[in-house]
Length: 272
Image (cartoon, rainbow, N blue to C red; front, top):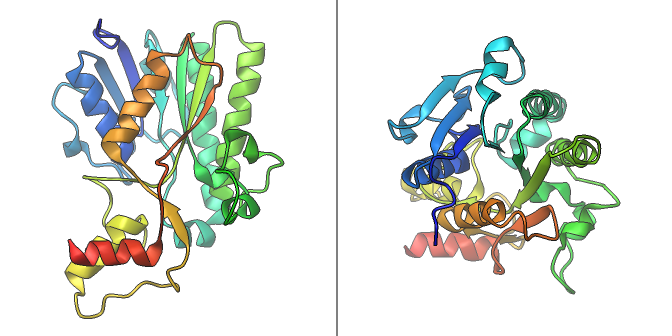
């Protein structure tokens, strides 16, 4: 099969972060000319290979230098976002929503003005309401279940606003195509190990390494979570863009079909 990615000019915002850096390195190996914008608030530049063009910018503040980076790109992958643990989201609701909306404004506006033809938006399962997410029986969560909207945290609402903005842009702007991946529980190498601000799996791994005799989870452990390894998430992300002309939908859950209770995950980590 012909290499879809060879010589493509690809811009990845938040490209030094966990998912962004994995995608950046992968596409670079497949012959893409990859450019990354990241403010390094969570991203790590050394995670990127030396073929990748890197710019350190805060995307909350649009300027002429940022605008020029978007010019003549073929595809934009938008991963830049203020992210953290659930406690971080709950304790910084206003700031998270404010900053993520500003970041999205900068990236979407510059993509439209630069005539970007293909745009990928990294969204989240947090767009779904608490009532839907806590369902114990019945069918799995489908993309249409995001409405009527009632995300439990401001991060999810900001992502949902970003999604709607893209659909309005596709409706009003000729030749602008956007695809949305709602990521669910992605884990793997280079993920943040910050105990106070990291995702569940790396936080638990870090906790058992640092405090083997005081290992405990913060809840009763009965909450069910679904997790997907980073390589599978990258494969799915690429397939969405590779097959964009055949797709009948613009929104996709990027997740596994397996769910585990938090205490089951904790036991697996202990036994490894």
